[in-house]
Image 1 (cartoon, rainbow, N blue to C red):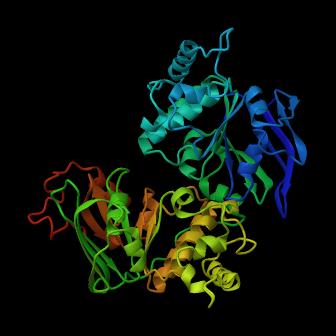
Image 2: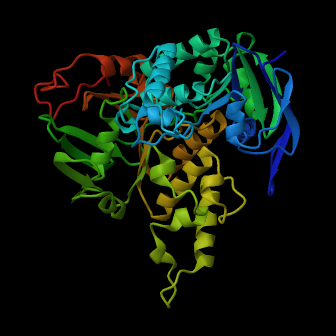
Length: 515
């Protein structure tokens, strides 16, 4: 008998059938992957399991006993814990206060038993084999340690079923290994885990079985050892996806420069040289913390620098802020699109037009909603946003469609240079393929792209040139057949001299090149 069973669960929201008779069985001591494209129904199913949504039909059983969770608190009391993709911690509170928030042990007088809380927190961390001070405030912790606190918080509820929703998204490879070690310990202790991830290699490394959903319906449950990535993707999207990257085209003419930057970061001696050609995809590669995103932010005036000399379309420009960059036609798709790229309660039309509202002013100085809507819908068609209409609230869209809305905004603004920071983080395989195709379409129209990515297949599959970062500097420039994962990692991990990171005689003018 399965520890957890969801039987023929259905759920409909106004105008949308989210789930139709979906079943999921998870054994004790099993890590069970839940796989599907964005919009397949994974999150809805897990929210029903955790009492956040109520099913229209179907049932939940734990140890064969039917359950009816009318709230998240009732699900927790029954031994169900969830680690959400977005953290639910309060940064200003201590770790131990976050773990026991709202259910602090109290004495006969109603006073909080702080000593008992610390004792239980330390026992939890000892069980997980992690070293975190329970009294430190959460905002002082790394993202990885915050993730481990979320897991400890769920286990403090005596969770026998643990849902992990995209837990590796904010983690470095080393931190992912720490997380997987903890998951293996929990598996040995008999905890049943539902693991949601868009990274196929993680499914095959850590999971025992996998259930695939498509368009809100159950497709299959398979032993991980008996399948492969291609077969799973085919079940997810309903077609074979042999190569998600568009066919590589001849590299653009290097001499047709759109942007050139000489940037020396604050506290550094070395000046880095960035060149971006028209219609080119320039990759920024390197380990997390290597300075990739900081360089991109420095290019648009959003990061402090000691020196910044910029040339755009052959003209010297001064970019002191992202607003200056936007006026010059440079747009940024930030790594955290939900917090920095979109206003989630607003509609698609609102998000697309917000940086260019003057275009829709009437003679009376008011905004023409009709013109705004027509422009938004034309752009949504251009970038292929899947939504009922421009009046759809953007927070209800899948990750891939949200990313397309941000792209549509910068096209509305007339941007000719786009900086994509981790453009497919948290996006499923099918949506990734669409984003890649869109990027190639944009470059064919003469738009230039800087792409920052931690996924080496993206860098090697899409980029015309690659700049490799190490300890905050560009240490190599690769092009053509030299854009290989092994070559990139060699440069990204080698020991360098911080005074002369490229090893060249004149570091400001010469890059180590493999082309």
